[in-house]
Image (cartoon, rainbow, N blue to C red; front, side, top):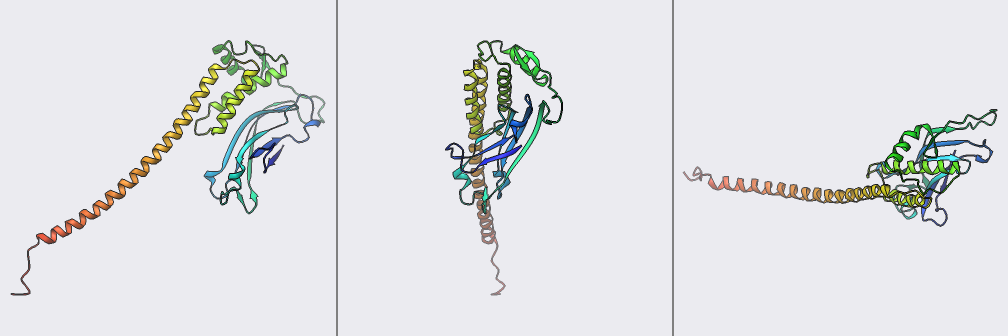
Length: 264
């Protein structure tokens, strides 16, 4: 695999775009697939906390040998003075890859390719590792695929895997999700609905996640304001304590009897 980076944006996009792609995918055996969890991190060279990370989980295959993120980082932020991302013309990007499922061997010298067995769940060919979660989903939402249109087995498998990835993304904590992640989730849901999935139940959950994200931002802002008020109060208390101490010294001096040692 190799990383494709578009430092000036891709397709007139005003963001840094990053994609992970399979090298020489056209030469690989028919039927190969890799279920992969990977992440891009644009490193901030001045402050690690300001680095930008985005995680994806996708199937790499003959028809889809590359996946990535169009809007990884706004170009105006990337090129901003002292932003910490671009230092002396150098941009550092960390890519982490974890292969979850393997279908078909990539070694063309092998006489045969080993294909992992799939399980039929409500007309969808599912990997054994996904069978339990998909079965449970159909039990709870029996109308989920009642109007699903694609008949091609590979497309049906791709759609259901995409749906599972979408659900997994939504299961992250609001702190881990960016506003772009939520926008992408809504767009993905529209794509799934166009294919015939009934996702009112999932949209309700996504709305809840979005509301939690808003509440998180509101709470953060409120907490920051209270912390600033607390710092002001502590400073005022400290100043008041100093004034009280000075006043005590003055009072002690006023109460002390006069000395006549210098005149007697």
